[in-house]
Length: 532
Image 1 (cartoon, rainbow, N blue to C red):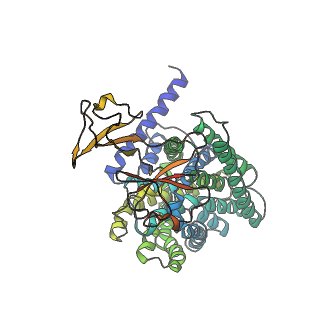
Image 2 (cartoon, rainbow, N blue to C red):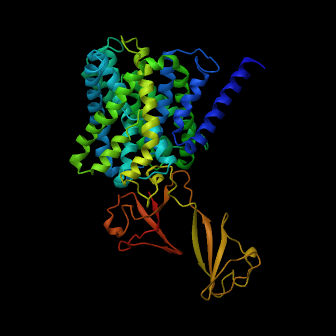
Image 3 (cartoon, helix red, strand yellow):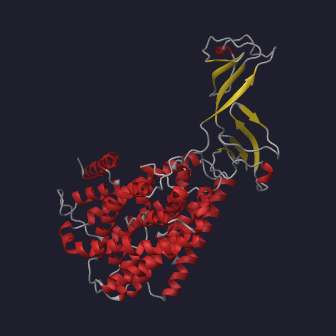
């Protein structure tokens, strides 16, 4: 067996171990990401396999690239119509909230740990953002939907605050005498402006190619999206922009646009993101030197407790209370401020930059993240229940684009009048549409479950299940399931103020197919077929 074979087997073993860890994490009551870290430490220098790995520069570049895919999918999988009502609050939390948290933590490090301003600012910046992977993982695995749009609020905040923390980290590295030169104000401007502009440019280019041209061969949409993410992130970084802003913004815009083969792209990137999370947390665990952890335990615990009990709650209450959010919601959002992979990656950036640091920033941030994910993450479901913030009547998956809102099948009723060519024929003798199935027959007030030799009679109503419409090429036909939380619920079509390029073509209500007009009222459990 050659070296390449050994490497392949080694990687496969790690992947299988992480899959098993993910499987059993729910039963153990802790997030799987902690176990991924533990597996990395098991293979590391102080573990069983004694792998010597301490290349911070390689780790920073590899993890940043993997994080870009997580950021893209966080945006791509955000269902904007669900998130819109809480978007302003989430935006303020992901920007002003990060700044407040970072500056309060900076003050704590200066006063309690006696660090310089530059090092304190850098420490606060690195750990100011919440971790999207950790929050998404817990909400989805526990199927934990929260009241008052809190799940969407946390989803958008945790998915969009990494770019702000990254920007502050770049400024902090500069204050510490390393990294790119330039005035902090210009660095902030270039990060925001170029990052936003490039994200929009590549969204426009990607959307045009996917919807207006036939350049992408069937089955290569996912490959095209990978290339789009890489070039968007890379060019943004090269131009001095914020690559994470670019890919996140591009993800939101593309994910909420009517592109082809979205049902294929979503599960593909769900798998890619899972691999990226495994890769990042394993690599971070591999980079850790466990024998150094006892020496930084107290400062890490002190910072984590200050952030959890003081800095994060203060930032959340200052931002959310003007929106008349309840104390229960503010407390839950405060507790859900988990630190994770992004913070550790940013600390690796600081160490790799050569910034003069008096403390072991990487191991401190690693322990903060470990405490945060293990304590806050494990207790998040319990905190939601104790604060009466769990919404039992809704599914948290509906806040994500990968929730299959479009129906898998459509029911169609066929009335058989006298003289119809199906009259007096057996089910197996009639020609039904491809992929369709006769599932019941309504006859004289009775419901029959038909078999192949069941004869169809005049005045029967035959109920067929037919495949949901799959749009091809430039067609954009979509079925939307209406529930009580949908913005169209209990409104007439005339009241909807639909854009000019959107048409409600059909409403499926129970066994009826309705051709709507302006007076038609959309009801709960309707399936609305739209053309746009």
